[in-house]
Image 1 (cartoon, rainbow, N blue to C red):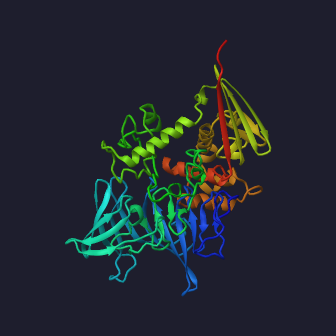
Image 2: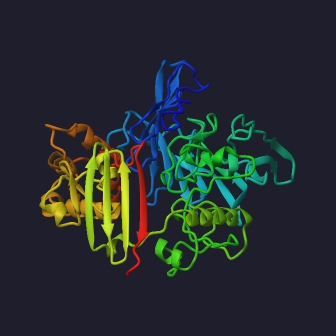
Image 3: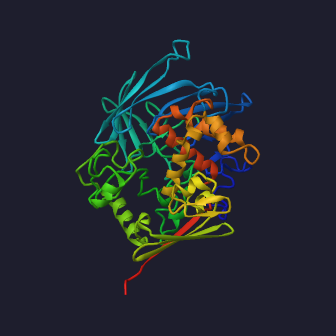
Length: 482
C-alpha cells in the first residue's frame, strides 16, 4: 500500500512482483493477475486474463444498458471497449427484473457446436428483494444466507444439502462454486474470469478487500471523525462483519422505508430533500434488495440514513450560488479562489487540482466570448472559471449542441475541440468512442440525450475533472444588515 498515493495499491499477494497499475481516474488497470479497460462512465468494459498454458491472454467484454446495468458478457478478439472494433461475441445475456436484479441468464449452448447459439441457463427466484432460489436443468435449488446476504447453505427441492459455503470476512476464500448461479458474497454476482464481484456501480475485488475504482461520490460523504471514510477504495469502512455496501441513491426515510425512484414528489434530489428524506441514486440503489419501494421499516437502511443525516448536519450550509449578485476570482499556481456575494451573504470556494476541477469547468473550455455568455465569472490563464460545476457542465452541453459542433462527427468534433498541435487527439477520439460504443464517424446530432450525457462525462474524465488529488473547501458567512 502506498499511503502517499491516494490509498492506491503498489502490489498485492496475487503477484507480489507485479506493481498495480491505475488509469488517470484512479481505476485499477492491472491487479497483478488481470488487466482491465474502463468506459467513459468508469465501468469495466474489458478484462484480459493471462493463460499460462497458452502463453497469451483471453479477453472478456461487458455490455451495459442505458441505465448502467450490465446486460451481457462476451468474448473479445481485440483490446477495446468498442463492440464495433473488439469482435464482441455474446456468451451470456441477462434478463433483468423490474429492480435491475438478474431474473434469468442465457448462455452458449455447448451441445450445438455453435458459439452463436444461446440457450436458457437458469431462472432466479426473488422474494422480498432477496435471492432465495434458482431453477436450472438440474431442478430447483434453495439458498440460506447469513445476515449480510452471503450464501452459506444450498439445498435441493427436498432439503438435501448440496453445498456448504465458507468464506473470509471480505469474501475471499469462497468455498462454493458459481453454480447454479454466481451470486455469492453479500448476494453479488462473482465473475469467473476475474474473481471480482459485480456491485452495480463498481466492481469489488475480494482478493484485495477493496473496490477496483474510487468511490464516484469522491469525498462528499467523508467525515473527519472517521478516517476510513476518506479511503475511496475501501469496502464498508473496512468493517465487513457488520456492514454491507449501500451503492446507490433513492429517497429513504429515518425508519428505513423508501419511495419509488419514479415517485412524482420524492423521485429527485430536490423533491426528496424538501420532504426531509435522504436521496440515493436509483440506478445503483441496492439496499432495497431489488424492491421498487417499501413502506416497511428496515434497520440497515435506517442506520445508513442516520449516518447520512449526521454527516449532512456536520457540513457547512450555504445559500444558493445562483442568487449571487457579485463575484471575484483569483488564481495562484494550482489553486483557484472564487468569491460569490449575495444580498446578505458571502461564499468563498478554494479549490486545488487540475484546471477543470479548480475552475468548475469540467470541459476545460478556453476563456472567451462563449464562456462569458454562458456564466463564466473569470479566467484562469487560458481557461474559463465558472461559479459552480453545474454552470460549467451546462456550458459544455451548450457548446456541444452549438452549430460549430452538432453538425460534426465525434472524431471531427474532437479534432476541433482538442487540436493535435497541443493534444493527443487520436487518443482522445478513441477514449470517447470506447465510452460510447459507437464509431468516430457518428454525428453528434444523432446521439440521444443519454449518449450526450455519457459523452460529456467522458470528456470531463479525459480532461481530468475528477482526477485524484483534487480538493475543494467552501466557506459561507451571513452578513447581518446594520
